[in-house]
Image (cartoon, rainbow, N blue to C red):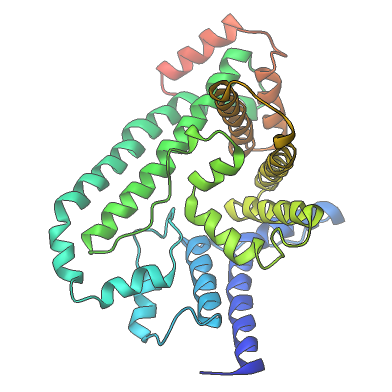
Length: 351
């Protein structure tokens, strides 16, 4: 009900408070360690314990404040807001939901009957997600984690092991994340709540733009609506648009984790998006006879770029990442039989 400047001040204060809490708990230690490196001294700073799901519920509350400020949400009861913030199925790994997607469902008289009707479907979806996570993703992780640990300890890897680790992590992350999303959808259905779809076969994408429309859909939606568009989007010319894309992806990378490798991952995907949009600008000037072949080529390039970027996402540090890349490029040969046999033996004994 506040009007004019007071309404704006309340909105800014709310967003600032949420970002401050997120920044303190998730990034204080990161910035302190970087400040120590810059100053060459110890600050004796102990990073605070990270509250569970703080990244997701912070973004959801910021989206709520933005929608409230834009009057996309009407009057809200305190118990409705509490339900929205505390509804747990999606808080660990998404999707990032909007208030207007969740609360109207609990206001419906069909809410509880719908929960009972969807019980069998909810259990099936949850079970599929649980199987993706525990049977597939975790099994793949057991196969590739020793390689990443070996590299982190200073070892080098041949092309076979490097590509096995990169492609394995590409599969692990998909089944891990999509499994969590399926479990969230299934758990929410147990309560009669429908969550938005967060994945749509992202590895079928034929461009990076399409990939981000299919992978973690609700995060892409949040970054577009509440960061990219307020920054100016594509309304201020190509240079500003490309700058906005880079800012969004850099912050998106940092959101995933308080580590420079995540920032670099965001920068790499930002560069991909800039190149993709630039290509779309000049593409009409070229004539391609074989549309199917071009789509296959687009898929191959997109998938390769995604795999390369996932190495940054998984590597413990830049040294490990460069070692994996060197292996993928064949810098250590195709197959080091002695190292391969030793690694196989370590896997067999569970090391």
